[in-house]
Length: 122
Image 1 (cartoon, rainbow, N blue to C red):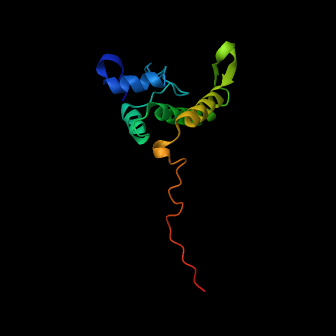
Image 2 (image 1 turned 180 degrees about the vertical axis):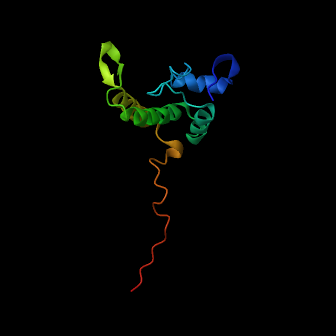
Image 3 (image 1 turned 90 degrees about the horizontal axis):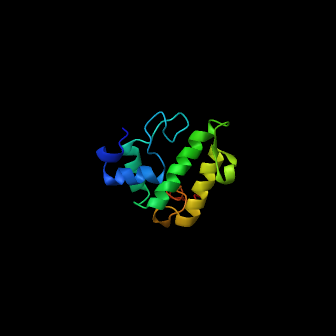
């Protein structure tokens, strides 16, 4: 569900402004004009330890993957340079991750790394 402005909470408005997802479909931030759902934004924000910079990086990672399916999609960059949208969001996500890191400073998550005990049998 998309809410913004008067009908949305202050947090949802702030999160939407952070990722420039404040225009309703068909002018949303995704390639086909969709928007992030309110629940999706809230989930991502809490999953990134309620850190606005990491939340924005996560959204950029999602947008980079979404735009990668549309190789001709582009956006205007600084000085009227045309950039591939996927490259733009990927670079922005990388920059934000270098600046703010990952939740709890764990780095990239490898959920199965080291979780299985190893026992050597002769």
